[in-house]
Amino acid sequence: MILVTGGAGFIGANFVLDWLSLMGEPVVNLDKLTYAGNLENLASIQGDARYTFVQGDIADGGRVRELLAQYRPRAVVNFAAESHVDRSIHGPDDFIQTNIVGTFRLLEAVRVYWGSLAAADRETFRFLHVSTDEVYGSLSASDPAFDETHRYEPNSPYSASKAASDHLVRAYHMTYGLPVLTTNCSNNYGPYHFPEKLIPLMVVNALAGKALPVYGDGQQVRDWLYVKDHCSAIRRVLEAGQVGDVYNVGGWNEMPNIEIVHTICALLDELRPRADGRYYREQISYVADRPGHDRRYAIDARKLEHELGWRPAETFESGIRKTVQWYLDNPQWIDRVQSGAYRDWIRIQYAE
Ligand code: NAD
Ligand code: DAU
Image (cartoon, rainbow, N blue to C red):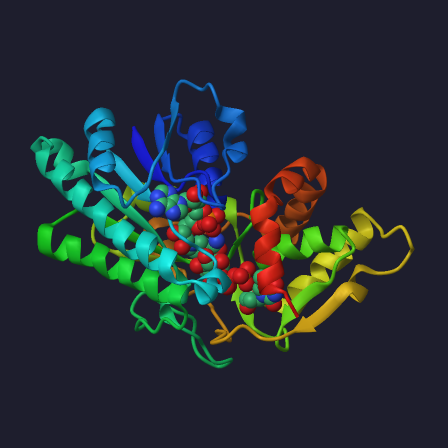
C-alpha cells in the first residue's frame, strides 16, 4: 500500500480517486483537514476496503511513526501543504509550520521507518514530494521556460516555504540516502478546486452575480495543467523516476490571467447564460495587484517526456470545458465549501 498526505485537498483527492480506480492498490490518506481539506471530495470511496482515512498532522512525528509502523507502506506521496499564495501574504505562520516543519518531521519519521525495512524493501521504497514551479521565481516574457536546473528564487512566503521543503527533501537523499523523488508542477485546474484560486473563484463568482476580481493588469502568465494529468505524471514518476531526481511537470499551456477569465465567461455564456441576457465578462473588475506578484511561470517538461514518456492528455480547451461543467453540475459542493470561514477569507482578501 501507499501513504498519501493531504489527500483530502484538491490535487490529493483527485490523486487518491484515480489511484484506486486505475491502480487498485490500497491507500492510507493522512490529512489534517484544514479549511482546504474536504472529505466530501472522497465520498465516492468511503467504505471501500482499499481506502483508509486518518485525520492527523504531518508535523506530528509520533503519529506519523505509528502510522508507518501500522500500515508499512511501500511509498509515501506528500501533498500536504498550505497552498494559497494570498493567504501566505496575510499570514505566513501556517506555511512555515506545515510546509517546512511538517515536511521535516515527516521526513524524519520516514527516514527511521525506511531504515528499519528489510534490504529488498529499502531498495524499492520511495518518498515522492509534490512541489511547485513557484520555487523558481518569475520569468520575463522572453525567458526560456523553467527546467530542473533553474535556480531557486522564491518570491512569496508560500513559494519560499515550498523551496525550503524541496531543499530538505534533497538533503535527506544526499545525507541519509533516502530514496526521494520531487515533482515541480505548474498551475492545476479541475474538479474539487477550492474557490479561493483563480479558476474556481471566477466560476462561482460569475454564477453568483458577483465581481470577477482580476489582479493588476491581468497580464500575468501561468502554465495550466488539468489536475488528472498532474496525477498521471506523479504515478509515472513514482513508478519509474530516477531516485534523487527532480521532474518538472507542466501543460505546455501558457496563458495570461485575463484570457483565462474571458474563456470562463464565454463558456458560461454558452452553458448557463445570464438570466438578464447580458455577458458574464461585464462582471470583470480590475483590483489591486498581489504584492510581489510573479509575472510569468512556464514549465519545460521535456525531461519527463524524454525519460519517462509522459505528456498531458488533456488540451486546455477540453479541460476547462469539463471543469466549468463540473462546477455547474455540483452546486451543493460549492454551497458546502462556502462556509463561514470561507466568507471571512473573501471579506479580508477582497475588502476594497
Ligand atoms: P490544497 O490546499 O487544496 O490541499 C492541501 C491539503 O493538505 C488539504 O487537504 C489540507 O487539509 C492538507 N493539510 C494541510 N496541512 C496539513 C498538515 N499539517 N498535515 C496534514 N495535512 C495537511 O492544496 P493542493 O492545491 O491540492 O496542492 C497539493 C500540493 O501540490 C501542495 O503541496 C502544493 O504545494 C502542490 N502544488 C499545487 C499546485 C496547484 O496548482 N494547486 C501546483 C503545483 C504544486
Ligand atoms: O504554479 C503553481 C501554483 O499555482 C501552486 O504552487 C499554488 O499552490 C497554486 O495556488 C497556484 O498559485 P497561483 O498564485 O499561480 O494561483 P492562483 O489561482 O491563486 O492565481 C493564479 C493567477 O491569478 C495569479 O497570477 C493571481 C491571479 N488572481 C488570483 C486570484 C485568486 C487574480 O487575478 N484574481 C484572484 O482573485
